Image (cartoon, rainbow over all chains, first blue to last red; front, side, top):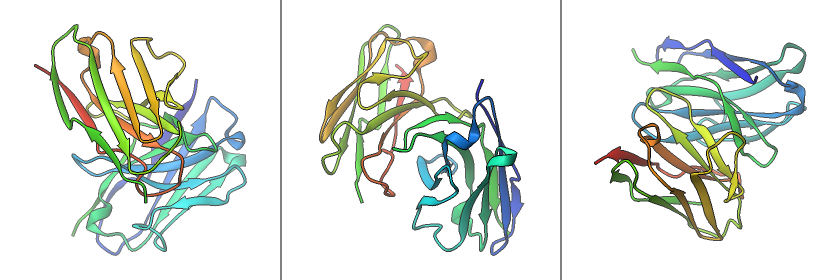
Length: 118
Length: 108
C-alpha cells in the first residue's frame, strides 16, 4: 500500500536551515505529482509547495517563496523540501502528500514537526 | 486568491445525527472541491473529490454535493469514529486560499 515517511524535522533557530525528506513506497513515485502541506499547532492546513513528475515546481506559497525549495529524486523515490531562513511562523507539522495533477491530495504521510525557536 | 469559508466552525452533535457542513468559495470553482477528515494527531484523509465523488474505501455515509460557490458535506449517521475536523479544499486555482478553516464535529 502507499506509504509516505517524512524525516528531517526538529528544532532549529530562527534564520537556520533544514532539509526535509520523504520516502515513498507502494506506488510508482515517478508517475505522481507531490506536495508539501503544513499545519501550525492548533491551526488549519496550508499548502506549501507542489511539484510535477518531472521536478518542476508548479506552486509555491508566497509565505515561503524564495526561502523554501521543493525537489524530487525519482530514482530514489524521494521528495525533499529545503527550508532556509526559517522563521518562528514556519513552526508546523509538515506533511508529504501524493497529489493528482489537479491538486487533489489522496495520500498523506504522518508528518514531521519543525519548531523554529531560539 | 480564493477564500474558502466553512460553516459552522464547530458543530455539536450526537451519535446517530445527520450532520451537514457547508463550504463557500469566494468565486466559482465549478466542482473542483475536495473534503478531508482529520483526527487529532493524525494526517488528513481524503473523503470526497470533484465535489461528490467518494474516495475508494470511504463509507457511503459520507456524501458531498454542490457546485460553483456552495458545497456541502453530509454525514448520514454520525458514529463515534466520525468526531473529527473536516476541511474543504478547492483545486480550481493554485492559490493560498486552497483550504477552508475547518469544521470541528464534537460530541454534544
